[in-house]
Image (cartoon, rainbow, N blue to C red; front, side):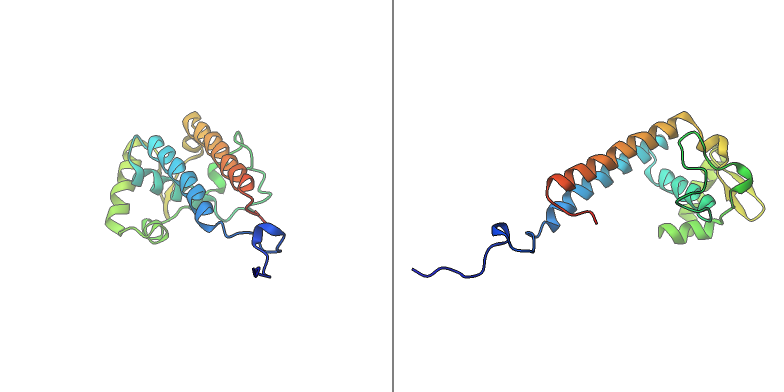
Length: 159
């Protein structure tokens, strides 16, 4: 009887077993939960919610992501530090047709979710500080923690 001299990954090898598919499933679960929340925030309109999120991100992307001073749920960046973004830039960022993005922005302007200013579109601080959005941010943080817990429990390194 011959034995394979190569140990399996479970027998102490330096390389852990490949868990790419598992990591993909766990990540997909996180993504789908997040997309559901985004759609709910936009009254069931997923694309509107995605355009809205891209707008908010673009308005504050110039701020230091680690220590901007606007890190807490109760400290959104004020209007004076938000930078307008063009519809063309939003459509390019999302990979959506310009006309589709324009229609969703028009809906958001009509509902007060954003305003047209010189240089483009801005989501005002009052909109970003809405309790529904704050609730979504907290739920998404719990969702993210769930993803990390599940990845760690599966033995997937996060560094």
